[in-house]
Image (tube, rainbow, N blue to C red):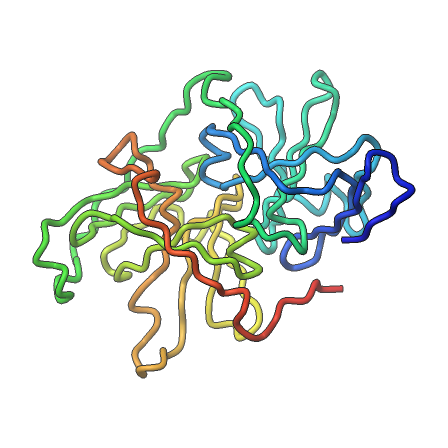
Length: 290
């Protein structure tokens, strides 16, 4: 991020990119201290933080918006949600020509912003716009549930989740109610806007794997970040290798609880206790790919 005192209205220049670096951009805006959220179905799942660029300031430095990024539209199709098909980063939204062809930046794709410190502007009431969201059908429950964990003495709770378009879905049978989740500020989790839980892999049944899932890995290549190829919503993390105790990491899978469909099960995301994990501080430090 760079400043320029000569710019009108004290505009600053910001730079951003998808995680893999295939798409890079810059734009100008007043100093960003707040972000706008939206309560609609896809904005909640992706945990978007929206920012309009100053007029005429959005510049693509690498890639092409209509070729490098995948577009996803639904409902009245007035807004194209654009994400990288390689790493899954949701970069921007582009309004239709009828609505001015304007762009909205997902701040999660912008570098050098502390998302946890941003205040939240009043959320846009997107739920009131257009037709109600049609929740994707649930997946049949897994039959081989891990009951060896101490918490398994609790009553089994069933949770149904999916990406936005429904191509990828899951059912989790969890020992007890989900009461907490983890948000991480590392380079990939911050971009994806996820909130993780880590249930046993055998407790989850999926639909749409592998045909509708893109998996992205980097650095040590021991964690695979799974997202829907059609709508771009981040669903899970798949682990390989051994953990510090010498156990198979594949025995558990991270699930993004923002994708749980409360319409199909007893789940209230707002009621969760959120742990903030400083993954950004762990080596190696992320550098923007060239």
